[in-house]
Length: 101
Image (cartoon, rainbow, N blue to C red; front, top):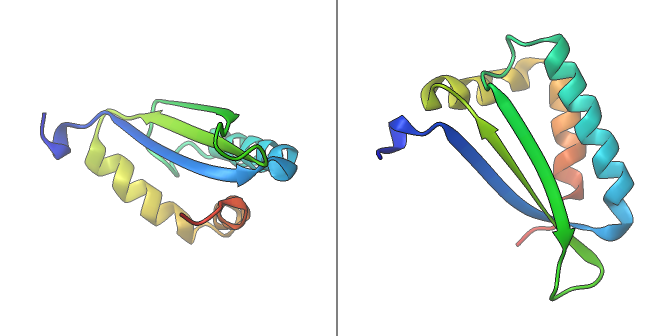
């Protein structure tokens, strides 16, 4: 499988457990906005889950997986969607909670 044939995109990140509800809220708002504006990001299904970090009891490990019919269309829409001020705001809220590696 080549990179251009991808149909699944994933991301794993860590947040403080203290930010759990804030992350749930930010992701729920972003997904609702995407549902209301389906032309923004080109994916067919998105899943998100988390687990406790076994090495750091103050952190959670989060992951999302997006399925898309076209890697190119998905990747392009992820970049271009940030021109939408509302979605860019949700993305910023999300990024502020991620613990840098």
